Amino acid sequence: MAVAPPDAESRSTEHSKATDSVTGGGDAAGLAADVALAAAGDRSAFERVYRAHCDRVYSVCVRMTADAAQAEELTQDTFVRAWAKMSLFRGESAFATWLHRLAVNVVLNAHKGEGRRRRLMDTTSEGDHEEAGGGLAAVAAPTHFAAGEWLDIEAAIAALPPGARRVFVLHDVEGYRHEEIGTMLGITSGGSKAQLHRARMLIRETLSQ
Image 1 (cartoon, rainbow, N blue to C red):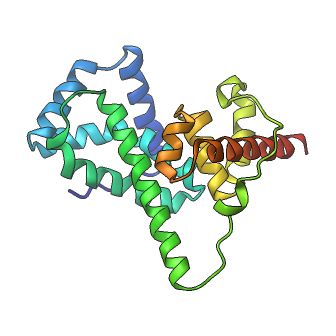
Image 2: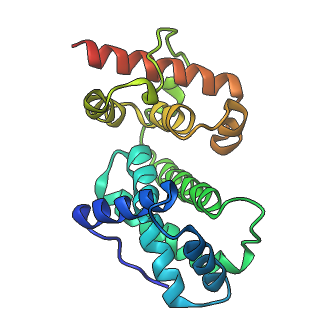
């Protein structure tokens, strides 16, 4: 099922609606019903599910890729895959958690595909192999920053090398453990910790300029 991602203004509106549903301003029971209907093949219900969750999925994609256009494509791909897999959702975890992990997997799979293409073209790969020697200087997790400072943090995250950015987003923004990140990225938990240290160091250097 193809569902076109909304533009930035639409995402902002949908984000407010999604936030209302989490904080009690929306119809959480209605969203749960839509998930059940979508799992049974109801396209209209899936459209409502999409509208409720598109902003968060896009946020995950854009933070991990630092590329708005690619994030739009990956958001689309996430929901296309979600539609194909809806019948497999059993409610063992929150739907938002299930969808979030699906989005992360879509981004990581896209990255793996890009890596294979680069190797086939025999070009030099930067990023992942260079990021294991991270520094130990750290900044606080994003949730510790004031709203105004977070805009600078977003820019600093986008400027990180790809591998360090993925680890930082997965750990400090999305809350995954190093063991989980290691499994996702095919690295050790120690490698994840090292990349996180480097990411924090680079962010701190950027913010101090």
